[in-house]
Image (cartoon, rainbow, N blue to C red; front, side, top):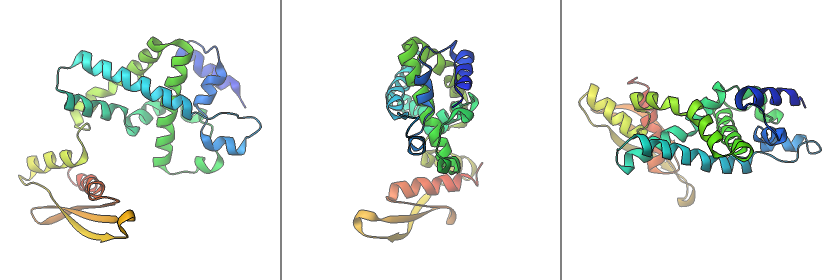
Amino acid sequence: MDVTKYQDFALSHFGGFGDINLLITAFTHRSYLNEHKKTALEHNERLEFLGDAVLELVVTEYLYGNYSEPEGILTNWRSALVRTESISASGAREGFEPLLRLSRGEKRGSERARQQILANAYEAVIGALYLEKGYDAARNYITKTLLPTFQEILESGAWLDPKSRLQEMVQNKEGFTPIYKVLSEEGPDHDKLFVIGVFVNGEKMGEGSGPSKQAAQVAAATDAMKKFV
């Protein structure tokens, strides 16, 4: 293992790291241990658990201290900031990819899987930074790497759930309200699969599937939004 690249990263991003193994663990995916049982003893899930809590507190403090909107809106804004897509993008911008320790199979995984791994690593790095340098250092790093994206989230409406975003788009451009219809329903009660279409003025604009009607509606709305971007 090349420890130097982790030391260089720690020096350039945090001014150094006393326990470099803590930072290396933050980049270690569970799958890596299966192929390196003698040299890797711990994966990053415990650090991710800790970092998730620190991240949520920092974002909550920021929103509470800077905005006077009601709880529901602040909650939606926080969700948009800490969702997988947002924090994985921050990890990518920070150069996490070459530092990830993954199994050969995970290295060939889907884009969505890689996004989740990056997001988990971002939270784990926050956890490691919190243990190494304290809350203020973790807050400063989140403030520098994640919070600047909030203005873009506000401007794009990305904080709205897909159904709300689609309704806003359709009403602004077409003057209609989207209608969701169940196209099919398969499987036993404990393992249902719903396929739902979303229609605008009688025309099907999107389709999605999921284990519940709500999940399928969200998938259908996400599909339909591609036609309105």
